Length: 304
Image 1 (cartoon, one colour):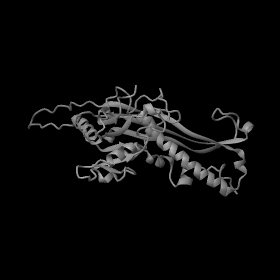
Image 2 (spheres, helix red, strand yellow):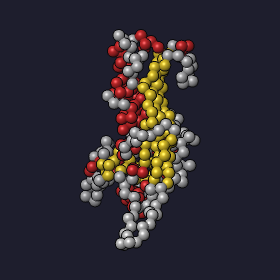
Image 3 (spheres, one colour):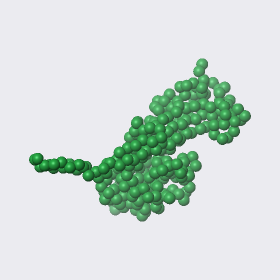
Image 4 (tube, helix red, strand yellow):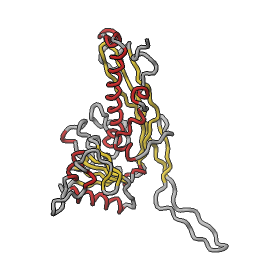
């Protein structure tokens, strides 16, 4: 009988019913904008047209002019992410049902970790494992000087949301969605009018948010990064914007791999420690076309 840990079929598709690129949909960014299946490993160039397209009225017999808008180029860079777990090699000797159960639980953990990676890298520019800003990430939402609007929280969540919307409208953008930290969604959900009525009943208690004030909405603590960042660094509460100005995709995904030899993670030779390692790896990329298409609500200014 085939060993579930060694079969070539050991991948996310066989154990979850969908590929990892579908599992990434649990992230807020991927839920607010569709992925690009044509993203390439390394870099992918996109042409961006700024300004409002304008047609020209031409009189009979008159000359036609060219459009004033000149497209610019934005490049989506890709980043390799992985999750590696070590186990005792005695797992290789367990019965197939037990191994399959371990693999199913492992896949669930890996899918969660990888699905959070896009948000944590694209919003905060951090290495998800360490919580430290990575020098390899060239641009991200919270990076200083990238043109993203900033609203510093006043303690009045309703007023801050209105200010965020006003910033976008002033830049000529229409919001297509909002990403909320669950704690902030809860604050909004508990906002009431003078008669004690809930102002935003669509938020319920602030969990499993899908809609807010007519906007598609998604909530996750990846918005604030509170599980990865130091407490003093946790700041972002919401991101409102035209998410058509954000592009992401999975350029390559590697099936789950069982490693029996060598030192794949710097923790010692597997044979020496009587262990095996199981790894999932993917290459994802993203680009922000125009920072002015987004507004961040945070407790303080942009990161450096």
